[in-house]
Image (cartoon, rainbow, N blue to C red; front, side, top):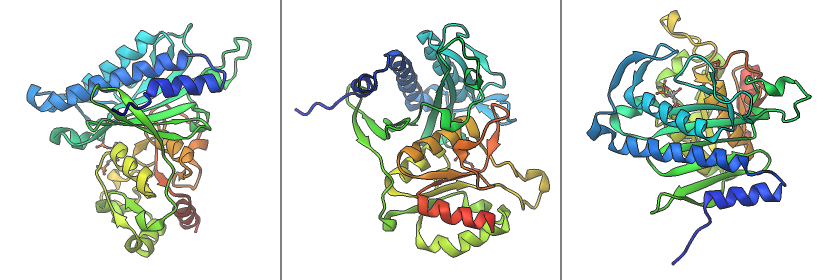
Length: 330
Ligand code: FDP
């Protein structure tokens, strides 16, 4: 019988090694509990009718699936129960949600069910989250006490690929780690993720149907580079990025600037900065990679102006990101 190290044991050792408290474990225990419950609902969703449309629209004007509502409620419930969360930003709710403004330590930015086009088919979706911490010295009232934080101030970010039982978590300056759910529904066996140097494995991932709508520079870059790599696209960021972390290459969601219907242009990009782009950029940095927006600015350096802010995203192996950086600036 082979027994593996559990996620919570791994985190406990990490906190001890860095002389930190166990508050973070309480938080992570809640996040894991939420993920397991979402996974359960998702796996049984088609039978219970949870995978259909809820008949409402979210803050981005998109149709809300029943599963999105359910997943949001689940995450909020478990986060509240920790009493350690100050505020949350959820993809599903327009306002910032106050949880424990006086006693909390953490800000959580999450998308409880990312990749909605996969929901109706029961295909992989993501629960993605980023965590920032407030300044615990009450005498200091700096920007770190405010929820609009740049990704390079996150202390951790992670994603569950649901319903596959896979969880990846990056800890600031301590690497990017993948865990598997075992037979007892426990996340176990930390495996350190580092983007492979072997370019033969690298993959490109983007919605190729949008190529004509990208800027001239990016279209040119794609024309010059796409035949060098395999192409994969699932349509759920967590799933696509999960592959990328193991194989290397680049995921991109460029700005849409040449749509035949100009109303459908998205010069700011499509993905949300605080709970999508920052989450994968943070994990990617800890795995040895990089991430940029359309102006070539590192994603993690962007200071958000609003909590649902969108961004274009180029994330992956450094060599490809450097090459795109040159193309963007050409
Ligand atoms: P979705 O709109 O289906 O919820 O921003 C969310 C996201 O999915 C990502 O998970 C995914 O990578 C991307 O958008 C897919 O967008 P396209 O359908 O335009 O390819």
